[in-house]
Amino acid sequence: MAVSMPEDRPVIIHADEVSRRFGAFTAVDRVSLDVLEGDIFGFLGPNGSGKTTLIRILCGLLRPTGGRATVLGRDVHTESEAVKRSIGYMSQQFSLYRDLSVMENLRFYAGIYGIPRRERAARMEEVIGIVGIGDHRRKLAGALSGGWKQRLALACALVHRPRLMFLDEPTAGIDPVARRDLWNLLFDLAGRGVTFFVTTHYMDEAERCSHIGYIYYSRLIVYGTPAELKRLPDVTPAGAERLEVRVPGVAAAMRALNAFGYVHDATIFADVLHVLADRGCSGRLIGDLDRAGFPGAEAKPIPATLEDVFVTLTRRRALERAEGRDDV
Image 1: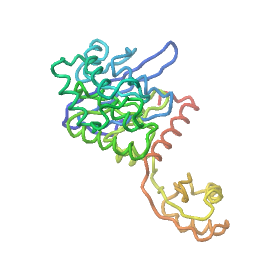
Image 2: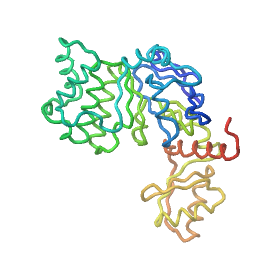
Image 3: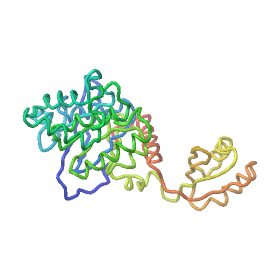
């Protein structure tokens, strides 16, 4: 389900009904999407849903068994070597040489990417400046903190000036300050025309993406901007609204709320409850909570979150699979 309309920017990634089967198992099932120049495209989904398989296809590492995909205008199957040379990739696990210095790692990757020797020093200084790692240039990579390791990995992936970067959970295992700094760096690079395809499990990071795709059991079930996804009819159905309910004893109150016929869902968020209920029922809800032994409750309308989006779509898709409606 695509909810975004095409924009007047070059298409960097185009996937048309892309599938990949391993024997009887379908890892990616008829995925279609477009990623435009300068996008930070967030790719989300549970483990085992096909994220890595699709990325391997788009990187030219795995042949699709159905459909077609192009990256930077090149077919990922028939022009896979050209695709590999024109993209950057940064894995979740730190995969650089720990016993080499920052500069030695950069020099090695500059050679791997075929940058002429006369240009390597200038190109290395360029990416050192971009990621801000100059003060650590003589340190061994293994001695860097998690955040600086990720900056070094990004620098190595940028040294050949790719127009497209694939980042696989780039902030996993690093502290919140380093996470924010890395995302600020991605925004800066996107402003320079670099396109990013990013996998993440963090909802706050998904909120930062220009567009999001959500894959579940091999199917891309939705993609669009964060704002568009939050407005999907399934997320907050007609005649319903989302409420933040502040009440003492949230765990017990949630059990009480779930017994009210007009409440469709209730979830604990820290010390409050997020509730999906019939529209206009907040006064009734407060009164019913009071009679159930939870006096002093307060309720106010709130917008849907991306977590609401993904929980709703996952439940719907799981129900379709359980009912044998896998082709819906």
